[in-house]
Length: 145
Image (tube, rainbow, N blue to C red; front, side, top):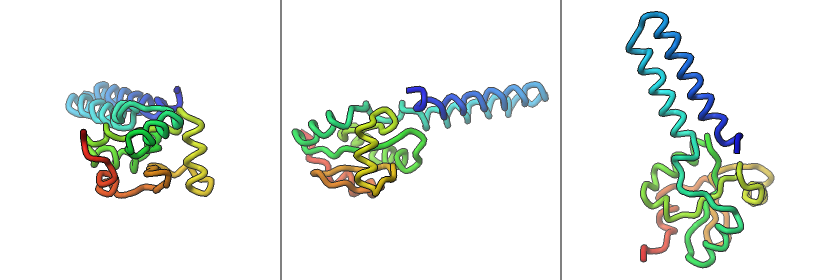
């Protein structure tokens, strides 16, 4: 769990250091702007941006029952963030597996990608797709009930 929050915490610390340096230098605008920018970076790279995570086994079970795709992702992945943001509200209709928190999910991604932990890896009907286009992922969603 600590590994997931490492990058966001580093962003917060860097923002605090930059803000303090500018404040001590007498520059009030950058002293406020830089910490705010780093807080934004921390939030975007945190697990808070993504829908609720489930284990790989639970995601596969749910996917078999409702036909929704499973997305294997990890924090600080720009491609995962791109997928999440481009899906918008539809992202909550997918099953999200954080491979840094779920060893079984990481193993599934390695098996699908020749030993690499390349994410996002989307599993649709038992077949894995690495870094698919968000529009294609949206097309794979079953119609809302």
